[in-house]
Amino acid sequence: MGKIRLTTAQALVKFLNQQYIHVDNHEFPFVEGIFTLFGHGNVLGIGQALEQDPGHLKVFQGKNEQGMAHAAIAFSKQHLRQKIYAVTTSVGPGAANLAAAAGTALANNIPVLFLPGDTFATRQPDPVLQQIEQEYSFSVTTNDALKPLSRYWDRITRPEQLMTALIRAFEVLTDPAKTGPVTICLSQDVEGEAFDYDSNFFKKRIHYLDRKVPSERELHGAAKLIKESKRPLFVIGGGAKYSQARDILIELSEKHKIPLVETQAGKATVESQFTNNLGGLGITGTLAANRAAKKADLIIGVGTRYTDFSTSSKSAFDFEHAKFLNINVNRMHAYKLDAFQVVADAKLTLEHLAPLLKGYETEYKDEIKALKAEWNRERERLGKITFKRENFEPEIKNQFSQEILNEYADALNTELAQTTALIAVNNTIDSESIIITSSGSLPGDVQRIWNSSIPNTYNVEYGYSCMGYEISGALGVKLAEPDKEVYSLVGDGSFYMLHSELITALQYGQKINIVLFDNAGFGCINNLQMEHGGGSFATEFRTFDNKILNVDFAKVAEGYGAKTYRVNTVKQLKDALIDAKKQTVSTLIDIKVLPKTMTDGYESWWNVGVVEVSEKDSIHKAYEEKVQMRKIAKQY
Image (cartoon, rainbow, N blue to C red):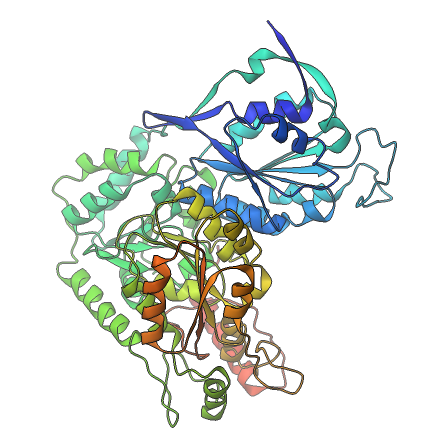
């Protein structure tokens, strides 16, 4: 048994190069590369190791720790969690900046490896630069904040600890049932400390993603529930996409006439044009999907964790009469809503169920087709909304007066509605292009009205709805799909929050297209505020003298080196999209849209914290409506 003398950081890099994954008879490296932002806590350790011998790891210099971590998350999501990037940061604020991204990865069950530097294991120079101090324990550092946001967390204070920590880390990263962010904190003095490592530690290590087989009890119980139902409904979650269950879902849906509805994570598992796909479910869902859900007598959750947006805060289904069947590799999610649980791989379970359902057919007949046709007519209407200075009635309740809408039209020099612009984008770009978004009103609009005609072209993060994912994530998607056009759909509020990795994309020649919807405010939160009886308070972007803020985002991106466009009409938008595709450099299309022109409602309800006591009658009314809806919603 040989020994190899390496520093802790050198051993880490060498180990990362030897991790492989085996899925459905295909084997490939699991760690694609590493995003870096060097500081005093990692540049002399991991930095030196990467400079000396990165192996096959691709190294990208990020501009913000949260931004590059989101790029890593989007990369893994686009690769169906079968490849990852690692992320290294310095101590203190560099590590703290990982928190939002760690929450994003945890909420969405996406594997990513965080490698933040830490303070000295010896404690001799303490407190070092950027070190916090807690009187109750000298062992506490900034990295402890990442504990509740990590699926596995460890701190390396001796070189030999690296071996057990990394083996445990990759067991978690490659387990579909519990994957998520893994944090390995590296004491900065230990990063450079040498140790005689067992050479076997660096041998090629293969992690097998064997599909979990359902038991006979689970299969026959599931088949019995389905065959006893008259109006079953597939709820397609992210787990169905990661399991690559498209073909068997289509087969079962067609053969037995079972409609499909989608969560945000599950959208584009099956293409939107599929006859029985009724689209998004819940608060950001379609009218077709929500009506089907209300009448379903069996909800078949395939790889979903049933967020409040998917269940309309547990009011989407007829809980008095409907039963639930959950297929999920994660036992916790399978148990939700008192369901019959099948704790197994989604694709494999459905394939095993198929022969047990022979001869079964639902009672939907032509209803699925009628629901889909009705929604397609509504989508067509949403694509043709136009502004009228005298009487503008958008899809949602017009909470702004006509005078204020006219003010926005003048200030932004636009008469363009958000839904009209979004459908124009959908109809113009190539079908194999990939869109990405995360927060604000855009995720709701795209779940409802975006048609994904090719599977896995929809990379929307809505488990955490993290502002800042949109542009950073576009870089990660481009790294995952270098031959496809990638479009980041982002609001002005999220652009302000974080767009650092646009610079990284430009720096490394990774072309992304930013489609920026500017309505001069936190539009969806303004809607939430006003829909529940409040006024428009601190959610519009106005200057000190109450003028609407009009920022030239095209000029901002032009300064970075992007090709930019300014858009106020549908024709300008289509022309910009056509020209942007021809570019080899990253682009930004600055679209000025009117507020209050996004989609809303469609027989859904969201349980939010409406106040019980207020001086406003409108807020009292909103609270009473909430009280009534809570009587309908399931309480657990």
